[in-house]
Image (cartoon, rainbow, N blue to C red; front, side):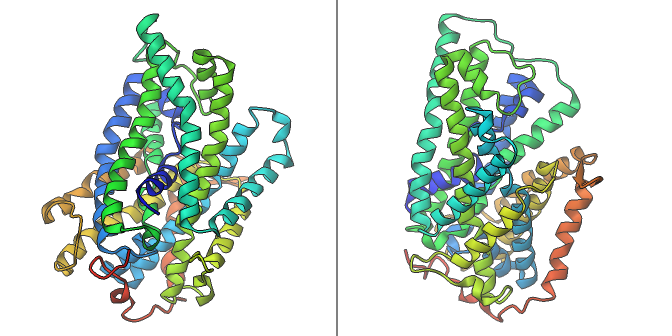
Length: 443
C-alpha cells in the first residue's frame, strides 16, 4: 500500500465518516459537540498518531503494536497486548455488520427483518474475509473508492447546509438543554469514534516505504477524520435543524430536510458502505495479530500460514469464524468494554514508546515524536481520558442472558484471562531482535 490507500484504510479503521456521532450531538448540543470533537483529537488522537508514527517507522513489522510492546516489555506483556486487542475485537467487530444492515433496512425494512438481518451480517463477514485474501493492496484500494462514495453525499450536505445558513439565515440553536449524564455519554461516544489509530500498524511490512508513509498517513488521517465529523455538524447547525432527539440513523432525516429525499437515500447508502468498509479494513488489521503471535509460538504455528499474496489466510478464516459467532451475542454497553480493553492496550503502547527510547537509544527512528520528555508526556492525555471514561461508565452494565454484570467488572475479567492463557504459550527466545527495524527493513 502507498500513502492514499493507507490513509483510506486508517480512515475506516477509526471513523468511516460522520455516522455514529449522532449521540454526541443529541447529548451535548451543537456547540459542545463541536468543542468535544475539536479537543479530543488534540488530547487523544494526536498523541496516539505521533506515537504510532515513531514506532511504525522505527519497527515496520506485521503485527505492529504487538511487536512494539513485546520488544520493549517482553513476551508476557506482548501477549497481553495481543489478547486485549483480539478480545476487544469480538465486541467491536459485531457492531459493523449490524450497522450496515441497519442502514440497509432504511430502504425496505422487509429486507432485514428477522433472520434476514443475521443472514446479511453473515454475508458481510464472509465477503470481507474473501476480499482480504486478495491482500492489503486490494483492501487499501477498496477503502479509497468506498470512502469517496460514502463521503460524497456529505460533501453535498455540507455545501447545502452552509448555503441555507448564509442565504436564508435561519435561527441557529448552538446550545441546548443537557445533563451531566448526557454530556459524559457524548464524551465516551466521541472517544469511541476516535479509537483505532494503531490498527493500521499491523500491516507495516505490506506498506511501501513505511518509514516515511506511516507518519504522514497518521497526520493526514487525523485531519480527515476530524473534518468529516465537524463540518456536517456545523452545516446542520447553520441550516437551522433541531438537535433534539438526534440519535443514530438520523443523518438520513437531516439530509432529507436539507437536500430532499434523494440526499437522504444517498446518506443511507453511505451507511451501508461505512459498515462494510470498517469491517473490511479491520479484518486486515486484526488478522495480522494471531499471525505474528503464531510466529512467536504463542499460538499454533499453522495460524501463521500465508497465501501467495502474503495474507495470513488461516488467521483471516479463524478470526472471521469468531466474529461470525459473535454476531448474535446479546451484549450491551459495547462502547464501555471497547474503551476499557482498547484503552489498556493503547497505554501499553505509550509505555513501550518510552521504554524503547531508554533501552534502544540507537534504534533508527526516521520519524521522532519529540525528545524523551515529550515521549513521556504524550501518554498523559490518553491516560487521563481513560480514567474519566472508567469513572463515567462506572454504572454501566452488560446483559448476559437474563442476568447483568458491571461492564467494568466484565472488562476486567476478560483482561485477566490474558495472564491465565499465557501459561500455555511457549514464546521463542530472542524473537524480538529478529524483527526488522527501520535501518534494515525493505520497502
